Image (cartoon, rainbow, N blue to C red; front, side, top):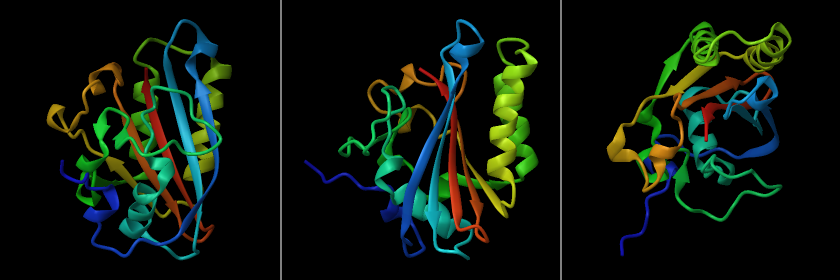
Length: 184
């Protein structure tokens, strides 16, 4: 059996140290019968770490190995080699494209509106989350659609309304945020 390739082996940058700080989840069930959610994992990183080097550090971290189909625990799960609908070995630096903060915000807004209008109170809740994590960000990277060949055995059960992922980098604050919006 071949040894699985981990995400950081695809990186052209040396992997910097980052440290998981916290996770915040907005559950759309608060707004009605809806199985969507936004999960943001925040990492502390060395100040000045920029661009793809920050992405490399995030995807190499144990917290990135998350199937997003089961609740996150207080510690990262042992490696299953899964990230959302994809095999972790299918994700590398070339899987991410640089986008603007505005494009990130618009993509999340469009995704959030797929099932109709949400209450102003609920909309303000996810808008505040976006504003907070995009504040002082110098770069934002979006994970592209890797297609069905990159999916794991049951990956098609995640993201019926889409699987959005952004790595938001704020080097002056020494912060990287992994924002995932999807459904299970």
